[in-house]
Structure formats: C-alpha cells, structure tokens
Length: 85
Picture 1 (cartoon, rainbow, N blue to C red):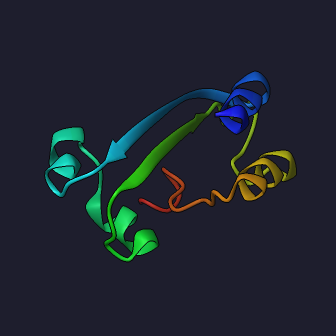
Picture 2 (tube, rainbow, N blue to C red):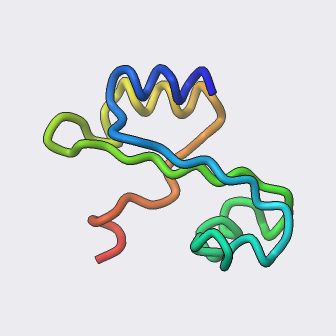
C-alpha cells in the first residue's frame, strides 16, 4: 500500500483493490477475468488493483509512475481507453 499512497499523493485520481479468492469473485466484483488470468495464469488467490489517472495531469506511461509500479512488482496490464478501443 505504500506504493499506492505515493502514487495517490503524486498522480492518481483514485484506486480500487480487490482480493480475488474464488472464480465467482470476478463476476461479483465486475472484473475482467481474462485480464487477470493473462497475468496469473489462472492461479488464485490474486490481488486486483485498478488505478485511475487524471490524464490531463499524468499518464500511466510517466517515468515516475512506471518506476513506482515496477519497484513494487506491479505492471500495467491494460490502459483504457487506448487499449480497449
């Protein structure tokens, strides 16, 4: 959570953290199962973290943000709207 606090202070508009412990959690939480399984190989439990950026101020591709994410072991799985369109 230290990384999320640092991102929140510097760049994030918001975030959501969900523990996925069973397959039903995907539907109940409205989480795209394919995105998570592409990273986890389908193994559970998993932690889903959705980060929201104010794109007028920051981009998820900013060096500072990339450094904080990679330093925590996190990576960018999907960037919306650019990858979703």
